[in-house]
Image (cartoon, rainbow, N blue to C red; front, side, top):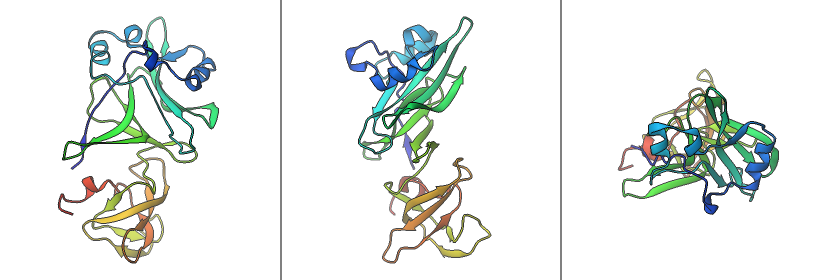
Length: 236
């Protein structure tokens, strides 16, 4: 079973090490009224204490989200009004610096941002630096992660570089349960996700290739593909 961990949230950006990149500051200049979240200004009470504690995480993260060799950025931003502060999460790609991709639109809910991380049973920590994890509050133990699809940031999107599995599932010729069944998997079959259809993880279909001596290709239904730690028993 997967153990979701390290809900590391927002931290101050006062130090030189935490100075926001030019890619982000240039983007914010085109969005009047928005700024990077600063806990000491934007938060109060318990939210402030948790966001500035020793285990706090960043207000922004940098990585190559679209695998083009250039560093991109995702950040928690705020719109400070007279009566309330609104929060949102956006991303900017170095390859498209003039575009803003909103992972979470501005609203009253506070968000945090970090890389997607999972604790292994041996105490190790797996980190996916091309998955942007968005936490829905200051003290949460679960969130939604986003990945670049080639056109947009898509929630909980798997790709061919992921080690995935399916268990006791029918593989279809088309993304429909009414189409022809090509094969049925065993209790733990490794697969690669080659393509997908659907933005919502709960209704998304994946076009997969099985990892076996005689690979098969076909479609599997929503919420079927997952990390082996979720899909397979510990001994498989």
